[in-house]
Length: 55
Image (cartoon, rainbow, N blue to C red; front, side, top):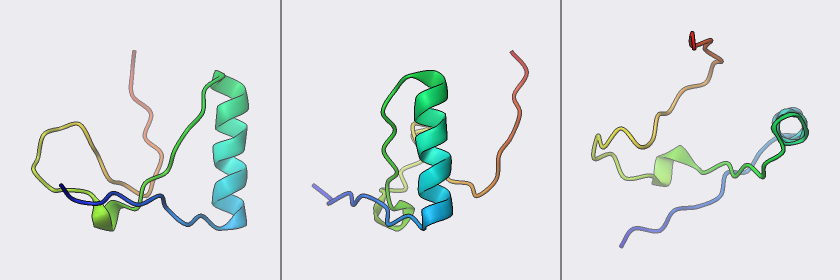
């Protein structure tokens, strides 16, 4: 089994994660995408921007 590592976040990224946690009431975990398996399962999506999805 491959090792999945927790991402190292800069202070600005960490602040954004903390704000999101407070707003939605959950604990978020950021993983290092370079250690994620790339099997195309659709369970993991890597991007560096925010997208608005219609509900």
